[in-house]
Image 1 (tube, helix red, strand yellow):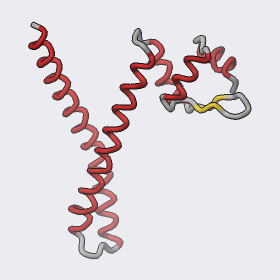
Image 2 (cartoon, rainbow, N blue to C red; image 1 turned 45 degrees about the horizontal axis):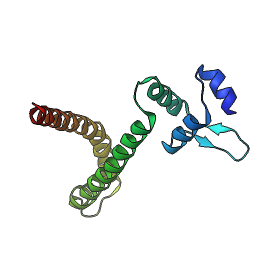
Image 3 (tube, rainbow, N blue to C red; image 1 turned 135 degrees about the vertical axis):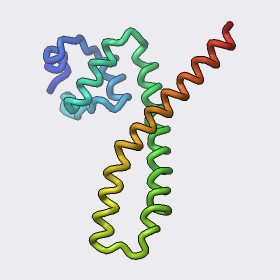
Length: 135
């Protein structure tokens, strides 16, 4: 759809600067024909960001930080899974492969829960530390 169509659809004025920022945040793709592409999830996320009373470029920067750390975390966890869990199965047959798939599926929500919990703990620690240094 065109940027004008996107603006009408969302009810939000999406000027070129906002579109550039959403593109930088990887929430929108500009096509050569002047149209833009984004998934419904990306659109919903972008609209929520635009509703916040914070500089959009700061939110994009924060998103990049999250992406960088989550990518590194995913690589580390995948390395541990392969080297420690998959390696525990000498020569996985079909039954073992099914068990590994089930284990990976069960670990995914637990890992997300652990990440959220760890983030909340770390953020609380940072806020308390910052508050103590300001007082």
